[in-house]
Length: 211
Image (cartoon, rainbow, N blue to C red; front, side, top):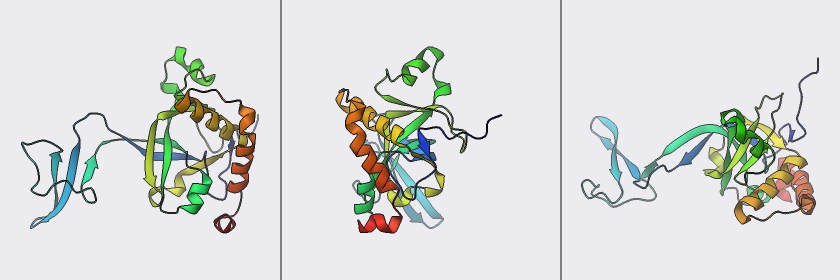
């Protein structure tokens, strides 16, 4: 009987954050309708409360106009695996910048006739991710249409389970280019970018910051 298997698409988490890192249980947010509901927190004599209002609704609106720094958006959230899209250089040089993560969906939820299209890259919105034994990660796919932005400080580092190998990084670069441009790039053209990304991600944190 074979032991735990690390798929060639993955590495165990590298010394620092980098493109292609896979996380578990990341909130993926999205708007499901055009009426946007906001929440405004306030303190009452009974303790903290909040007012809800729909932007543009004349039936009820707070006395003060919309506060982009204080009012909070109420939206749909899905807790799921996600893959980091932000480049390591951005992470190193802009510590307060947001990071972008794309939703990862389990392939088991896809109807059987459509699974092969995802596995063989025939659906440009999706990127196939094979399963991994240890750490456990089920056969899945990246949904490029569902990207969430998080402050780096809000990214739960303890939920990072895998980093990308050169093979996955190359597939990720090609997949992103195909999704946004509908242009097929020869994977070999990405070799230099992939090699540099892996090299940078393998540096210790303090060395990466100084570079």
